[in-house]
Structures are given as structure tokens and as C-alpha cells.
Image (tube, rainbow, N blue to C red; front, side):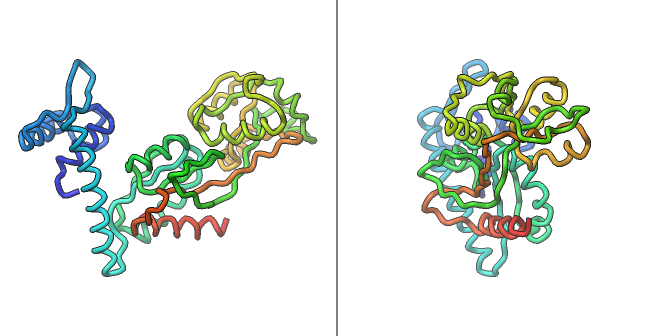
Length: 300
């Protein structure tokens, strides 16, 4: 965006925090305050109300935010079109991915993409599937990658890669069971699960529902907001089970820290999907990344 002050304003408005905006933009908090004051003087309006530690948008601030977001979209479209005249992929690309994808699936392909397209400024935001959908709808990211069953009708979903969730526990001296364990026996153990809103929990809920089992009837030790935390917990817990993606377990299985527990009559397959705004064409950088990712994963 040509006017950096508008980018500062958008960051403060998004976080409703001068401190978080400074962290996001890698500048000092006094610099954030200076840019906001310059905008307020320029427009002759207060943009934020400050009451103690609380920051809220004024009516003028909400109006400016809607126009600033529109200016950002137009500027990105202009950048894409200008670079497109010379078949050059450049500009900013804001990716968002749910936790499993952001931690285990996408990072290995990012260096290759950056080597092929060095003029694309790449960032990756990590959240659960609900948060990624929300970030797309509010224009905070350009392209998302999610897993789960629930779809938003305002978003377009494109299958990318197959995945499977498995039951996992701390490695035992006897090793993994030779035969699948009946589901009722598995559910006698306390479970360590992903948080509400995660695609991983959605898949498990749908599969249990198909077996006429409600989550309210399952013994849950606790909910955690990322797979690494679940794995660390399981390593220390003697009698718990978790459900995580196979993509996240390779190193832990090889190191003998965790083991997979096969379960009878429980299918936990899912698809990782690319997602963007319904009816809106992808900008050049996002389109290049999607094609690159599809090519990389087709060879897996």
C-alpha cells in the first residue's frame, strides 16, 4: 500500500492494540502512535477511542478502515496486473493455514517456491480452520489451507492432499497393538483433543457421530490448541490417547516416543483443501502458489 500510515492504521484496527501492531510491523510503539496522530490530523477526526488499555474504533475510524481495505485490494490488483504485463510474479502473498498444514505440510515446500519466485513477499499465518475462514472473509489473507468437514458458503474449496487421523499414545515396551482395538475400549481412555473450531476435532466428531457416540459421552482429559502440545502431553501421560494427523507423527514414531493405536470401525480420513473467496479470482502470487502446491503434492 503506497501510504504506510494506512497500513499502520489497519494493523491497529485489526488488533485493537498499538503494541500488537508494533510487533506485527516491526516498528516501535511510539512510531505507531506518531503515524496514527498524523492520520488524525490529516482527516481532522479521532480514529480511535483510548480508555485505559482498551482501544476501540470511532465512527470515523470504521469508515476509514472500510476505505483503507478497499484501497489495499485495488493496489494489490494494480501490482499484479503491472507485473503480469511482463509475465512476472511479484508482490505480497499472505497465506493462512490451519495448524497441521502450517506446522507439517506447507513449510517443506516454501523454500522451493521462494527460490522459483524470489520477488513474491511471503507470509504464513497459523490458526485453526475457523480462524482461517474468518481471516479470508475479512481480507487479512489471500489464500488459505484448511481441513475439516464444515464449509462456509462464501468460500471456495479446492481439494489439495489426502490425510488420515490416527489414535496415538506414549510408546510402550510391548509396542503397538498387533490387532485393532474395539472403539469402546479406546474410549475408556482419557482423550487429549484439539480445541473447538479445529478441523481435526471436526473430523473426529463426525466419525463418532456416525457411530452414535456423542462428544459429551467421551472422557476428555483436556483440549489443546496445537498438535505439538498434544504430542508432548501424551509423552508424559501413561494412560491417555490422542487423535492427530499421520503427517505430524513420522519423527516421533521413528524416535520411539509415540506409537499408533489401530482402532476398529473408525475411519478418520480427510482432505486438506485450498480455500479462497467465492467468486473472486486469485491474484497472480496466490494463483502461482496454488499451482506450485498442487504440483508438489501430486508427487507425494
